Length: 299
Image 1 (cartoon, rainbow, N blue to C red):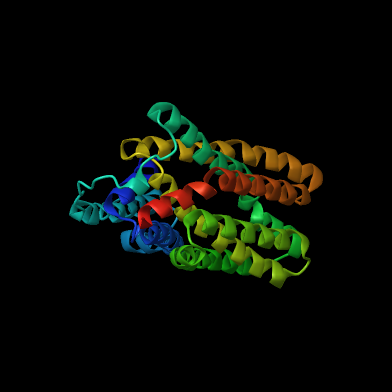
Image 2 (image 1 turned 90 degrees about the vertical axis):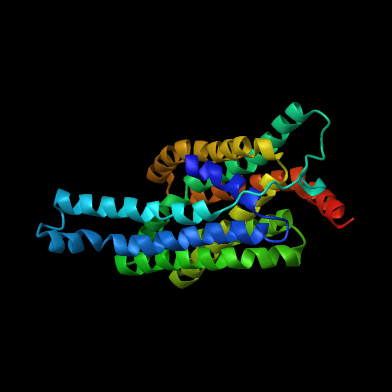
């Protein structure tokens, strides 16, 4: 969690208006793809180390070797971090808080506005997305191998989507427009998953939903950091992550109760409503703000 909170302010410091969107998107997409590759190889490592160390693949020693390998690989991240040089960049007009003359009260209002969509989407995602595998198994009697392929392709689509995000931002003329467009499109595909009785259509919709919804995440993070004074970016990043985690702390329990009694249909409807509320609140809060920032930057 310390790392998650620190990454956005760090990337904000090391980027500028020209490369920031690409940097945030690449970070998110490469993380997802690296996780998929790591998961693919992680399942083979206990058996590999078991053979090397002459123990069983489920022996504690084999798992210890996997954990040590994980720590060593994770430590290599310190190499590029040590090569980063933090610039003393002056704050540009487009990166200042243009909405308030009272920094403390203005920052509080801004933080609540930035965190509100995260909170709504966090709850909506928590009650449905972790159970997509259960939904596909129950609805379509899908095999485990096909289900695994579907989720692997989902990670690939998320990675590809993160590369498309910056270009889409340029085409649509702003991060908030792109976030709203991609999230609305993802809602359409999510409804297709829940209500179209075709495995192939639902599978395609599942991939598109994942790509579109996750494409918006780094764009909104970059926008949030741009609207926050530099000295407060760590705090705002923390609050936004807490808002997301609060949703995930209560969502699974509620989802379990609904699944047992009513199935998945109410969950798809509830998640749709929460997503639409998040999109509309974000648009109401920030659609004009981005227009102001763009006009200042190009003046």
